[in-house]
Length: 156
View 1 (cartoon, rainbow, N blue to C red):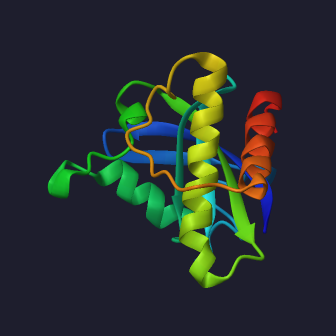
View 2: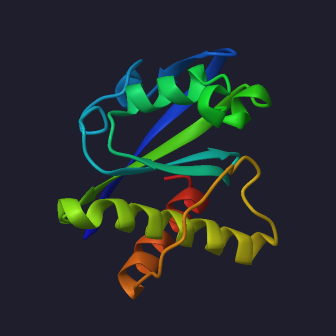
């Protein structure tokens, strides 16, 4: 397994349920490969501090729409940081070389290892993290999580 990325975007909150995107080369939309269906981990950060990590197999536009339009229906309220911050940095990694059967658990393992590492270092959970799924992890999952933490710290 390996993570391709990070692909970095600035997300500006335009209202309760809308946002704008600023990406590489002055892009105002998400660009491939993050637009394609496939396993991804994504991290929102503010000032170099992780505030939320999630995973998806959707293209990022669909996932962002869900996170910004959520109104509590079915118990999902969306990205809580959108109510408190005017903008956030979004880092996205695409998971490669994992079988379809491995994808979900691998994404959840890496996601939880990132949150655990953040908690261990900062004595607190990421400020806007609303849920996490735990699975027994391997050294490979922990190494990939470490790469994500390092990329956020250096602002990659």
